[in-house]
Amino acid sequence: MRTVFVLMDSLNRRAMECYGGTEVKTPNFRRFAERAVTFDNHYAGSLPCMPARRELHTGRLNFLHRSWGPMEPFDDSCPEILKSAGVYSHLVTDHYHYFEDGGWSYHTRYSSWENIRGQEWDPWQAMSRPPMEWFRETYHAMAVDGPGRGKRYRNLINRVAIRAEEDFPAIQCFAHGFQFLDRNRREDDWLLQIETFDPHEPFIAPPRFREMYPTGYQGPILDWPTYKRVQETPEEIAEIRANYAASVSCCDHHFGRLLDFFDELDLWRDTALILTTDHGFMLSEHDWWGKNRMPYYNEIAHIPLIVYHPDFADRSGERRSSLTQTLDLMPTLLDFHEVADVPPDVEGRSIRPVLENDTPIRDAALYGMFGGPINITDGRYTYFRYPLDVENQEINEYTLMPTHQGSLFKVAEFEGAELCRDFRFTKGAPVLKLPGHKDAERPPVQGGGIEDCVNVLYDLETDPGQKTPIDAPEIENRLVGRMVEMMQENEAPPEAYRRFGLPVPG
Image (cartoon, rainbow, N blue to C red; front, side, top):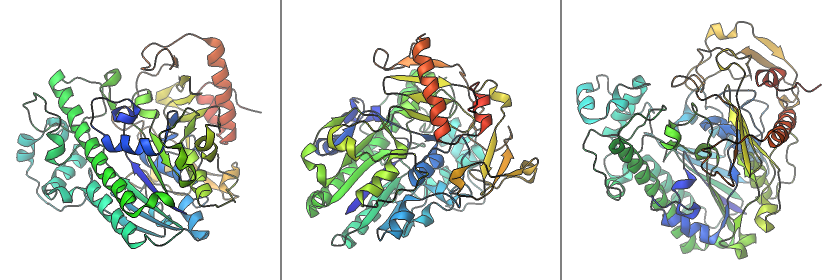
């Protein structure tokens, strides 16, 4: 068995034609959906980027125990399990977070890996004295003088080296993926993961894709929104959305080249193909840009999943309504490659029954971010629940790898640390229990903190845009009860229940 797993970052399902999108041209995503099975009720789990990837490796939620961080020594890793079973795994990625302090130990789980440089604020191109005045004349103030400006200017430096279309990192990812396919077309038992940081911000694409979405905007380059409330003019909003659309269309085009490769080599006979993302992105909906800070509306949490498997080639073009989420992909990949011994700590379930005949594998999906809200959906309703005191939470990091996204834990963060042996999933290893600090480098703090912290319930059937919360205590109580059960299944620590005002089991 062979599998090509295509993972994009911040791909909003509403931008895809196969999910009803009309503003963005995505003929190749639609072409794939016509050949594969499209999942209509697929959700994220632990957010954002690296927590989602840890979930892809381990098949279990992590946001109740840990912020953004590396793989842990006790974590089960899908590509490593496959490697032990004789399945070769190869990662091609331009997702530079793998190579920061908070991402090390993910890519080394694969049999081999390639790193494409230049995305976002990857410290790639060296320039000791950046031309800041030229940057200010050329780019919108959000890219030069906005939050995170100390890192954002790195991207402006990187752009100097990205000139021709083939220089774009995401395009290089597909090109290197094609090299792997060409070299291993006659081999069996491998997993190829083609992972693109696009269409994550900044929304940059070759000119021919940007020209597909003209706007009347006349200002400096505006393709990098800040995670905040919308304050821009209609022209600026249109410009940002057009740049996102161009990035998505670029991804779609090169995904189409992958489909051409499948056609040319007839890989459809014996190769599975999966397309998904880690999370979506707010593009002015609900008057917000970005993620992390606002409620986890479906623009962020309800994500695309399209799957082709040779065993279900006769299901071409079918759709599935059963609920699935990111953590289900780990046991699915093991299932596809006939690895029967799924580790007992895995919370996900293989999607094979859903592929076969839409047999449900779960009745609810839990999702959220460390220090942020905890959310649940049963596919019909979504319920957002916030900590009782967002600014002063009882919250701890449980880890043996004390790093944040881009830094080591500060010495002061170890004050009050103790060893904890309370979790089965650590396989007997004690972990550090570190009190969470408000000034630590973790997602709720980035960009100014989380807002709109109100517990709300939405009925997606009558209100798919999640614009009007409903008052339905019976439904809310049912979802809260299932939330507590799923937290128990995840071995959530006692303080996780307390800070959300939930009963502590036992």
